[in-house]
Image 1: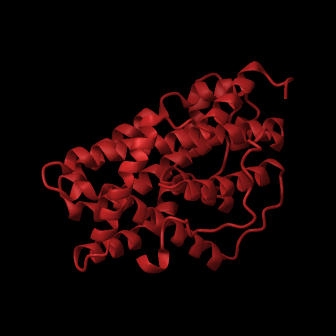
Image 2 (image 1 turned 90 degrees about the vertical axis):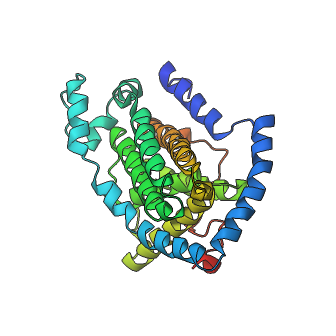
Length: 300
């Protein structure tokens, strides 16, 4: 890969470093702190009444978020941004793939800042409503972040109307929301599988409609449970708004970081070959919605 442009080589190093961060003493302390909070979340979700209402409401709404979020992305508006930046020939996703990564990164600009600001405002508003606000807040947070992922995809030349791209977007959120190493590894292995398939131009046999719908529903359900447990602190009066806004901005920052790095890697893989994708992560053999940290049967 030594013949790659210097900018592309630096980008690949940044992507590798992001995928394999060193866990310092603060990260280890946070992992220990998360355990009792996770158990507290389980306890409240298992409580008859409020826990049942929150779970069923959130799970019912999150299954609708993916299509709504992805369809709200307007590729033509993004193509117009490229044309205004001096790339007059950009009229489709394929035209973006012909540009240097350096130019695409410039057009992407401060996209993450926009979504973090929106997420913080929405989370603070819903957080002020306490536990009831979670029923609206969780689906809104998922929809907002799926839209963010869809926008990153479009900027780097990927069409989220395709089935494999919908799975990639959902798994990006699954990765960003992973509270355990096992669930994070599973989500990343599935992301690698999809990225390599697309880069190798493998004919991606579409899943049967009922199988795809079930997979989307299960991933959305897992996301709803994870985020509900993480945000239960905002159910406490007074502190709810601060926790809601702060968590939403934090989670959205993680999603935007993941989308930025993963789509840059996929962009380079299409330009230079699938071998540029980080070989340290083994691609998944099948697609599995049952993340190891979530007992979906219990939560149903």
